[in-house]
Amino acid sequence: HHTPSPGLISYSMMQLVIPGQVIASSSIEGGGDSKDENSFLRGHGTYVERFESEERLIASVCGTVQRMNKLITVIPFCESRYQGNVGDLVVGRVTAVATSQWTISLVSQQRDARLPLSGVHLPGGAQRVRTAQDQRDMRLFLQEGDLICAEVHKVQPSDGSLSLHTRSFRYSKLENGTLVQVPPSLIPRRKNHYMSMINNTLDVLWGTNGNIWIQRKLKEMGGDEANNLADLQEQLRQEHAKTPVLPDERQAIARLRNAIECLRLVHSMVTPEFAEEIYNRSLTFGLSPSQMLLPQNVVSLTEICRQ
Image (cartoon, rainbow, N blue to C red; front, side, top):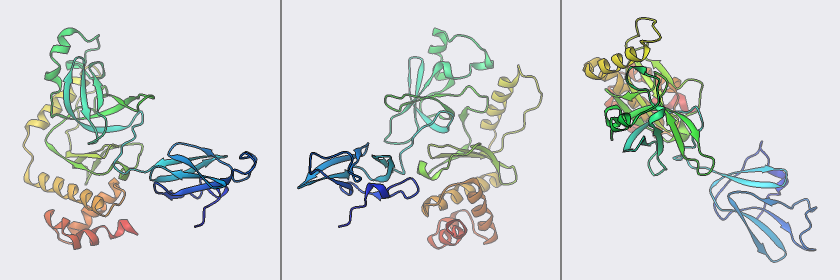
């Protein structure tokens, strides 16, 4: 069994390891001299075992090996785990309403995020300190089961828990659309996660936590009054929620949703460019949205994304 020397492990050549795999070994004769060229420092995701006259560094998690000087770390790889960063756009569901905060589920089987009352817009865009009355009215803003779009405001260094806010006018409750879920690792971070697609007919929110929201395009806001911006946005949102989705719009939403599902099924990166490409190919092939998910069609539609 060949054990790679730590000197070979670098950022340019990252090694995938599984739990129990030996990453490096060094001789402990003469008290384990740290000047030995094979010596190492144990980092996260590893443990050391002594075997006869050598020490072996063994992976405790599945992931990629990274080395910095003599420090060797295994960065865990988990496709379903979401690692939040400040500024991330996320789509989540309200699971509980507590005193002055909502609990938001971003990824199943992971710690919920919190959305404080101070992190949401008050009706009419009023800028003031939140009162006891606002706390009593929290369910008028958001209640259990509501789907929302928000931004990560803070990541707690101690446990990695997330605090969200919806203070930008484009973040709000999501209604009258469809939600698609993919592993968070398949959604690459980009500058803009909110975009119009399919000839400007659909609005899509690409949540970095793996939740993708698709809805028909909201009407453009009329008027430039900054004071009325919050009212206008709320008015447009309510109008959108009350207006039934037309059959053609429903068909387009279903087709784009299944285009994203095709990418998930072949474990390809889920990007707007790939999704739109598959959407157009399905039209070229004359497939209905439901036919897109037949195994042979998934393979032929995603061929261009797997090259």
